[in-house]
Amino acid sequence: MVSEKTVERVSLYRRLLNGLLAEGVENVYSHELASMASGTAAQVRRDIMAIGCSGSPTRGYSVQELIVGIRSFLDAGDGQGAALVGVGNLGLAILAHFAGRRPKLTISAAFDADPRRANRVVHGCRCYSMNELAAVIGREGIQVGIIGVPAVAAQGVADQLVRAGVLGLLNFAPVPLRVPETVYVTSIDMTTSLEKVAYFARTHRGQADGSGRAGSPQTGR
Amino acid sequence: MVSEKTVERVSLYRRLLNGLLAEGVENVYSHELASMASGTAAQVRRDIMAIGCSGSPTRGYSVQELIVGIRSFLDAGDGQGAALVGVGNLGLAILAHFAGRRPKLTISAAFDADPRRANRVVHGCRCYSMNELAAVIGREGIQVGIIGVPAVAAQGVADQLVRAGVLGLLNFAPVPLRVPETVYVTSIDMTTSLEKVAYFARTHRGQADGSGRAGSPQTGR
DNA sequence: TAGATTGTTAATCGATTAACAATC
DNA sequence: TAGATTGTTAATCGATTAACAATC
Image (cartoon, rainbow over all chains, first blue to last red; front, side, top):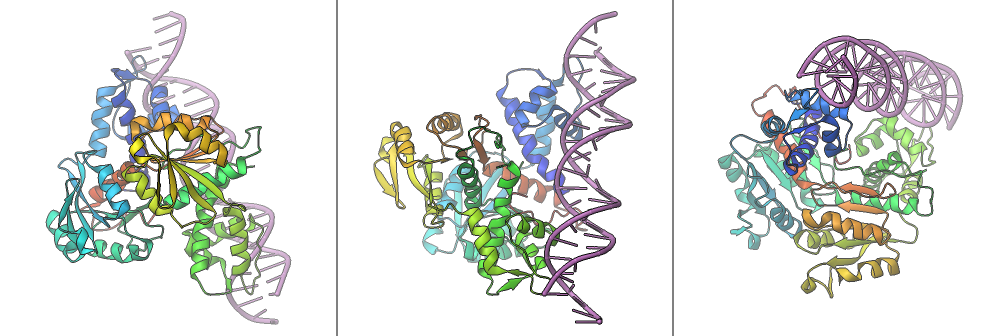
């Protein structure tokens, strides 16, 4: 039931929810939702039907009903913890970024190979040494791992996290990870993302007509 | 000529190049390239033809020829600079991440609204105050902007960068940016990425058969 | 009622996949 | 030659788009 397709809808629902929370209205039409989600009205109507919401031709959709429906899709009812590995420059930025942002999804444990970075609390998150990884993840029932270590260490860390029972990985290291088919991986490769932007900017220079424009693709498109 | 489609091939070529540089062989077959690029052999053959490389039925493709072809696609001949806005936790991590990684693509200027963060050099990058933004970007001919500021400030920074002449943006703030159609935007939304992984891990729990597995999608798929 | 929107069904478009002749 | 791979063409698959009846 949990297809890759369904997972991809998470980002759509997140954009819709952010848009709905920013609005102060009671009802919305599909074309308004479409602009929030950077999609077409027909696509949005289809994805809204998928979470069991329906609208009326005269009033559109109930914002309240949409928020409830999307929240029940996005949020873990009883909260969910994640484990971060690597508390260097990037790891600290990740901890700061997620601190207090999602009540239902928090980084509840961090690990680092450097003992000087362990045994402390950063942005409300307890830091452990690497040899405590399996025990802490097992004890807290953590299902999500975040890899914030250098490229050379990433595969080893992924293997440890998977052995500890993690079912999903968010990978910041610029290497493809080999994991069992039961584990879901999303990679954030800043370097490649910057290269894409740089490629467009470079090749676009001098094209004054704008025919080669690429619009404004957002994450996950 | 610079379609969104072409830009998307950047990540494919990057994965291929990384794989080719790691190998120590002289020739490769398309199925070997396919595993490097996480695609099919037919797809890879098509994308290789697009950069003017051809292979032989007996020896496959010349690694040397592929590296030259991909490099000429990915790299700016005379180097390219990028400007970072926001030198907080995330900005520092971004500077550390890109320092010395790509000789042809470097962050050559950083800006921050906080004067205490300006007028210093971090990871080899000079930091300026925000009111110098337009002048520095114009002087250095910078075409790429990186947005590492909080969500509330992101749109304002994007507007300033676009006015200064930037043609592409890499956005780390979790908000969709409104930019002219001539400007290309790629957003990296860590929060939504983590939510996707968390959603899979949560809904996958208890499905022992593995039929709902999602494989290992990499960035940009 | 008139009008705009919803939800469904048909058509189109594009991309991926499969098949096959050419090549070394 | 035999065999495996390349590069091209045809077929299939899926998704997006367009059309339309139903609804308030």
